[in-house]
Image (cartoon, rainbow, N blue to C red; front, top):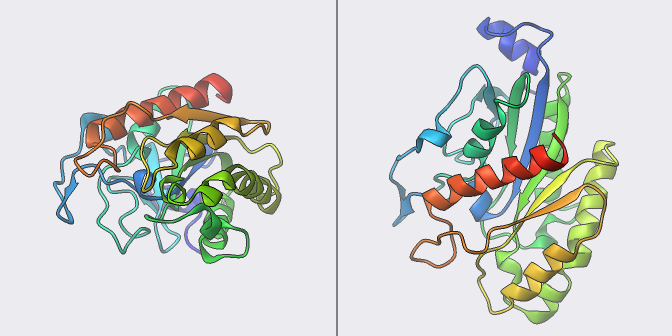
Length: 252
């Protein structure tokens, strides 16, 4: 199933077995997997200082269920049919590390271009996410939150956009049930762009979700790339800080 946190750190002789491990699931679609710095299907390899790797503190579960040093692009081997660049994950983790005692473990699960119905329980995306989350926690780590940024693909049809709230609430309930974490925190990003004309319908649905331990961070107003769909590198860094602030304010 891969290396547990304790095995990873013992092998690298970098941490004591008593170190606490904080796991964050990163999921959704392309703005979570990261398109910052990607142009013409190529990533510019520009990594902002807020996204620098920290081998002793921030790790990620790779596609082979093995823990390794986290670095952008976090989703390169997960969202593998697209070119990934900078997303919000690394600036999120770097912003948290001064306030959390222990190791931050990131579990990338986002896949570009996916609609909420594709994340329904029983489907490959959902089941892979749950499998990766369980693997991440198998070494004794604690899953602290699911960080979710998705919805741009649900803006194309009115009835799909109107069903977003129900579908997202089902996803939250199912993830909590399948992970055995009935109060698992979820930090959701209200989308800043969309593939269709019903963006505001989806945004209102996201902001209207009324389940315990669900917090919404609004990305509207963050800078978009020339495609008017994906966040720029600078905007992704800013979003990571916003997500960290939300986690610390509500769950830290």
